[in-house]
Length: 233
Image 1 (cartoon, rainbow, N blue to C red):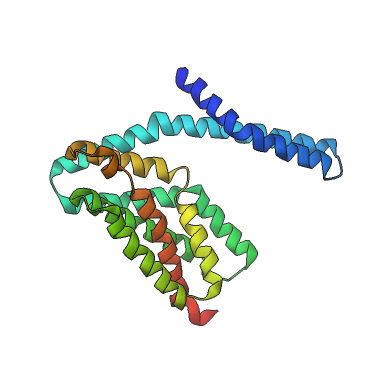
Image 2 (spheres, one colour; image 1 turned 30 degrees about the vertical axis):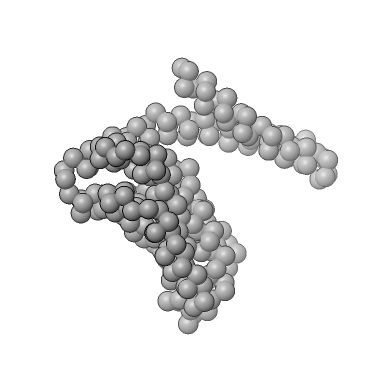
């Protein structure tokens, strides 16, 4: 019960200001319409309820399961298996990430037929999966995060020069869309579980950073998609 109260309190504190602002703007800057204001209020309440349920589900189910899975895989003593699990988790969790689907829909609405159907989602999913796998390598060998981030960003900026300008904004937005409310908790929890079994001295340093890599993957993948499709645009 305490988890419910804590989750509800956090959601109300984080959403109340923006909901209040939206209602105030709707009432003052746009012609007042009681029916439309009621829709805004009802939609805000539904969003609040959805966030409460999502966060409760994440805390009681997704995060514990991610930690349990992360603590189990290293016990098999196989680096290959660990990396494969990282890639599979990256694939599965990104396919399920609602932000990715929303972004695909928005791109299609802004420019119908700009991208082949499903190509954007495929690029984002593969980008996240490969870089989560890279994050498992980094965790296993305790590679300093900066040694992976810098080359990754260099690769990204090199691709900027070859990709059509129309892909640049989509690519960088893809990084944010891919690391959304569903994928981030699970990826972090999984890596925390891995580190807990490996018994590293600096748990905080080793447990985090996978999401940073996962956010670069889709950017590079979408830019590469732009390079491959450049002749079509």
